[in-house]
Picture: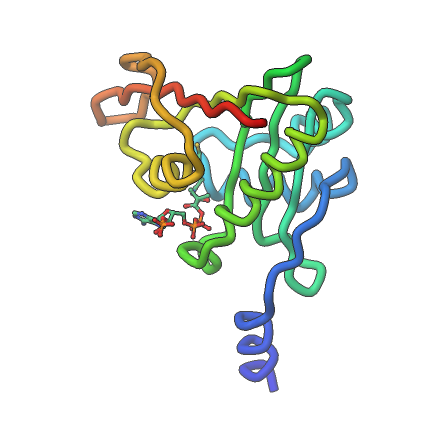
Length: 161
Ligand SMILES: CC(C)(COP(=O)(O)OP(=O)(O)OC[C@H]1O[C@@H](n2cnc3c(N)ncnc32)[C@H](O)[C@@H]1OP(=O)(O)O)[C@@H](O)C(=O)NCCC(=O)NCCS
């Protein structure tokens, strides 16, 4: 029975929708599991109640499996974070979240989107390149990790209609 339900969950299509501050408790652990410096639930909640922040989530049977978040000021936005649960990666979910998110930002009057990404983060770089982002600058020694050489941050940009 448990195996059957697990299979059903694994096959179910994620539902994408806008996220609100009620999602902070689910987003914080997914963020923490995805990044070296995780955000606390309070930090996530603080972002989600900010009227400049636009966020989307992906859920399966009500369980959060992905999110994306930007801060928009006038006609520019910066993608603050995007993450997909480990078991759901590599199936186009981030691509779908990003597509929906960019469409929403465009609808809110945003013309240009920026973001920073670790030069070694291949899945993320691929995701953004496929979505039409291109590198505009590089910040050397930006991401420090214990025992590793600090990595550069690539600053990417995409213009949207
Ligand atoms: C980056 C991340 C959000 C991608 O999520 P995802 O749902 O697996 O991405 P998608 O399945 O939509 O794939 C996006 C692209 O990345 C590629 N990709 C996915 N995993 C990859 C991997 N391990 N290595 C290389 N490319 C990979 C896919 O092939 C796809 O490219 P394609 O369209 O040319 O096939 C996910 O890996 C993640 O949560 N990582 C941890 C958090 C993070 O680093 N966020 C980005 C910070 S800027």
